[in-house]
Image (cartoon, rainbow, N blue to C red; front, side):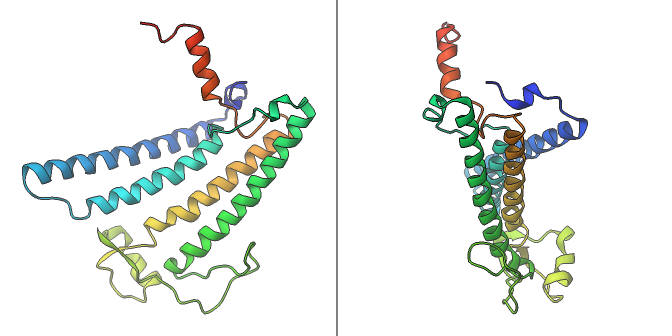
Length: 229
């Protein structure tokens, strides 16, 4: 079965966001590569280095992974095991797909709560109450807005955060609220994509959360002699 995107018409808005996500992910990978390359040249040729280079690469790698997870749900490209499900009748396969999707939604909700609760204090916001699901917001939680990165210099475009969340105190390094923002943002994207996939399964536009089968595709290519010299 081919991916659902190949079978359904996509709107201009959907194409725009597809291109946007792909370009952002590609740009992050490109910047990581460029910073690493420049650092290697500086170190071995000029005996110098970008002191903030490694930390920026680590931050961008985290962004790349977290955005890639949500994009994988969107494109149904995550790996999965469906050998047992495939022996079931069509109705059974659909039922298992719905149950799997609901389980993923529950997990994504928990992930979203945990992501917000971790990030909120760095933004001078309040985490949620409740052990498993949000039951409101806690009060009088000491914020961590003054926490900064180890070496990444402060950028002028973020100076407004000093008055917004740091009581007017200046930042000498980039505040952690900026790189950590990807945590709740990507969790929200994952939740959105799982909900969208669940709707497609319920409406019969998609059979499961995974559609691509890399192993089967490779076997088929070998059978057709595509790897012969």
